[in-house]
Structure formats: C-alpha cells, structure tokens
Image (cartoon, rainbow, N blue to C red):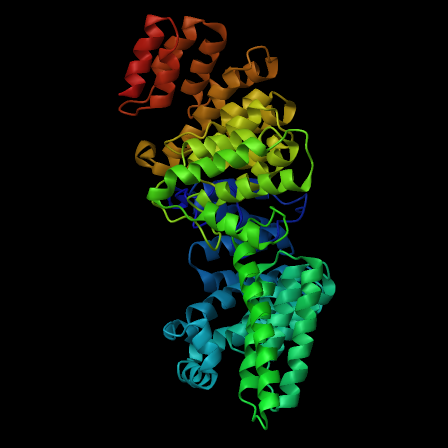
Length: 578
C-alpha cells in the first residue's frame, strides 16, 4: 500500500478485489437480495451465506451480470479460481456485459501466468544485464518457459482480446494486453497497445513514455533500422517531456538511448585523426546531456507527483541535502528545515514561495514510513519537531493545505495521518470531508487516528451520515465473537464513531439513532455510554454496566468514562480498562 497498516488483521471492510479496477454497475431492481447485503456479509466473514444470496439471485435471473460478477470474485478471493472462471464463463451471452466477465477471466490467467513466468528463475539478471546480454537472457528465458506458463498466458491473451473486441478503447484492457505481451517478451505486440494508449491519451506522459520505451525494445536487423528506430523513440520521448517535464522515466530512457548511441558510435571504424576528434567531441557533448538527464531522473523521482517545480542544479543540491540525513549533521539539517519554513509566506503565490512549499512536502512525504519515493532518508533518526513544523507551516497557505491533502491520499502511516488531519480540521481546511470519510475504514487500530472525532468536529450532514453508518457495520457471525480479531476490530471502529457522535449533543437525529442502538446487542453498551455523556442520566450508566461483556476490555471507552465527575462512571471506566 507496502502499507504501514496491517491489512491482514481482518477483511477489508469494503468490497473491492484488486483484480478488477471498476465498480459494480446498477443492479437489477427485481432480484431477491441486494448486492450490498451480500458484500457486507462476505466482508464480515460470512462467506457461504453471502454466496448463497447471490446464487439465489442467479436462480431468479440468470442474466443478472452484477450478481454473477461478484459471486465469481468471491470464489476467486477464497482461492477457488477455477470455480470463479466457470461462473463467469456461464454468463457469456454475446452482450456488452461480457466485457466484465472476459476481463475477470483474463485477470485470473494473468496472475497464474505471472506465478509461472520464466523471469522468476532469472532474478540474477539486472536490467542492465538483460540489455547487455540480451541473447543469453533470451536463451535462458526460453529454457525456463514451462507449458503451464504458455497455457495460462495464451488463455489470458484470448480473454483480453475478447474484451478488447467489445470495448477497444477501454484503458484497462489495453494496459493488460500490453503487460501480458511484455511478460512473454513479445515487445512488438506490447508496443502496439502502448501506442494505442499514447494515441488515446496524448496528455498522459506516462503512456507517451511507455510507448517510447517499448518501441525501443523492438529488434532491428541493420544499423539503418536501428538509427531510424532511435530517432522515432527520441521524438516520442521529447514530446513526452513537452507534456510533463517531471516524468523521471522519460529522462531515464533518454539517458539510456543516448548511451546506446554513443556505444554504437565508438564501435565505428575511424579513418583519420580529424574524424577521431570530431567523434570524441560529439560523444563528450552527448555525455553532458546524458548526465543531466540522469540528474533530472533522480531529482524528479524524489519528488511526489503533485509537487511541481523546475529542475536546476541548485535545487538538486538542496534536495540532496534535504533527503540525506546523517546523525552527525542533524543540527545543520534541522536548521535548514527551519530556514525554509520561515520563508513561507501566507499570502504569497510567487514561484519561490510555491517551490519552498513543494520542497517541504517532499521532505514530509519521503519521511513517511510507507514512502514509495525512489530516494528516501537514511533512517538514522526520525523527524519529530521538524514534522510538526512543516505541517504547521504548510497548513497556513491554500497551496500548502492542498499538498497535505494530496499526501494523505498516498500515506496511511498512523502518526503522520493523525498529525495532518488534526491540523487541517483545526484550520477548517476545505475537502477534508472526503479525506476523513475515506480514512474511516482504517480507524480500528490500537493507536487511534482520531478520524471519527475529527469528522464530528466538521459537524455537517455528510460527516454525521458517515458516522451514523458506522453503527450499522456488519459483524462476523461467530460463536466465539470476542476471540475473533475481526469482530473486536470492527467493534472498536463502532465505539469510536459512537463516542464522536456523542459530542453532537443538540442533534435530535443522532440522539434517536443512539436510542435505537440500545436495542442492538453489538452497539448497545457504546450507545448507552454516549447517551449518558449527552444527558448525564445515570440510568444509561446502569444500562452500560449491564451490557458490558465479561472479560473484554475497551480501554478507550474506559478512559472516556473516567473524565466524568461521577463515581459510578469512573468505576465502570476502571472495569472497562482492566
């Protein structure tokens, strides 16, 4: 994600399998069971019950493509990949809805091919080795190509091609076909689909550069063909830079192409001293250009995609100082951060002010524990005071707030997320509703990120609705629920949402929801505590005590009760902490 948050603790509480990038379309209105009901049951661990509901939908309407698609995904998620393929194959009926089934089937075979790929036996080769020892690598690749790989690979190609015939301009199927052909080192076919993506999305530098990269991999049989190919590739790459001058892959590929050109030139026969001098000068000039491209590639790979500023050698040196920490240089580095932070002006939209803010967000992003930036800090020490200083400074400007929101979209590190959200909510930063609602699903961890509490501070309809929905999270049906980690984690989420709602004392709708919650076993203790917090009526305390499960602690709930000047509340709080 790779993410700091341990997803393995329990099932993800929203239904989205990684193999399918698009969401479920509107379901048939007449089917017996709603898709949301089946998905909620599945995510709560009630797999068989969820699948039964979807099978009943299909018995009622065999053409219900949504139920069929999700039923297959459920089987795939449980490791029953052949059953998933069978379910999707049964739904193929020559309609546009077949696209989803073909893509699902293709994705299964893609993963199976990947698991059997010859490249997994050739890990000793670096990218440079593959390029320089192409013939040897190709030979060993073929020697390690199994019948299983070829079968899965061919089935994947056929499924994706069937989907491509239905929607030839769909971005995802083009990407998958390009990647699958690359998996079998069929670069010419891979390039065809990368080129289609580049033609369809001429403002997307990622696609433009990929088209150039895979065009460069096409084999040629003569020097003239290679020269012509290099010119076409360079033209594509320079066009990509016109679209986005911050794409590190473009600079890296330019440097590689120029190095290859120089290697070919140096192999030419030299007839005179003058020719040798001219060639030496040409290679020297190209070397300077190549080194600049490599510098730019490293520079932009170190910067989050949303932090925009032009390359210069001075900025590159400054970025190196910012992104390389050593304990002996800690004081100097900290002073550098302070000096940058001081120069940020609240009402200045100048290039220098924006650049400084972009540099500061780069430091913050690179220090995140789940950072995927190419160059990150040597972890000799962690940021403490500097982090808070950067967040505080950036929260004072509109551009800085926007940068912090972008970072929230890429990191799930608990402490960093909590510090940013708390600061931006205090500043009443716009667009925080969507950010916080999106983070609610992670608010089950032992160390709370205070997401629910921050949502309640926004105190608007959307925030209240999101918190009320937490009361109705489906829980796993299990006889030993308090030994079930998924069950307890979801209960913690519900508890935090309910305590956050308790702060909105004058909202009648919320009070009614809390009263209704007293009738539901899973949340009644939390609702009783929340109602006591709102009304100070000790009858609710007695209910909370009665509803308290044996030998189960809720430390946060206990600490919440201990803040009240009431001996019964504190006594119950102590029992919940133990």
